[in-house]
Length: 256
View 1 (cartoon, rainbow, N blue to C red):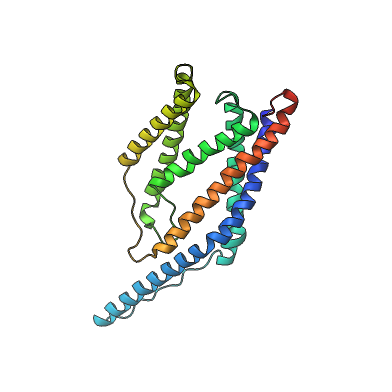
View 2: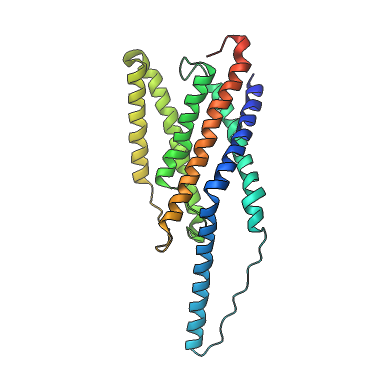
């Protein structure tokens, strides 16, 4: 059963990838182009300043070697983006199926479709929304090259802590369920999760490397596109996988 759920989860992830790619191509590509243009403008301004300083000192103008373009922008925006989204979404689809197999009938007395939808909503909050509030997505040209390792570590730490806090909140809800009932137990668990993650967000260091001259509209558009792409992926996983899981489990009397 788990293997068949895994296959269906990866298939749902593939469909989610196609939908997310279409949205990101339409809603996010222009912000990436503007960010790259901004980065090029900054590099040209730095080169011009260096040349003027060299001339003022009577020194030869330093030559700025052109960096070879390993992958064209058209390839990056097309097959490159599609490949990355497909791998990412398909992998998350498989992980989502495994999480569903583990949580089904343990998380709540719900059918496959409802369980899948709830699990997707919780996954979206734990894996993307909460970490994004602390470390939002940034387009190219935002962020220092020397801090990329630190920023990546902080972001993944936020994801892991958020997932652990979400699992702990779910366990707390199960323990409180007999005494408080389903609704009150869920409210208490949600409040505990929010309180824990608020404390974690305040404790972790801030990262603010957005250049002062960077267009706010471009930054906002990129982050909205990132949010929309993730929302489409998780919604597709929750809804489509729920239908496929229900059909698979129907002979066993597990229909919602």
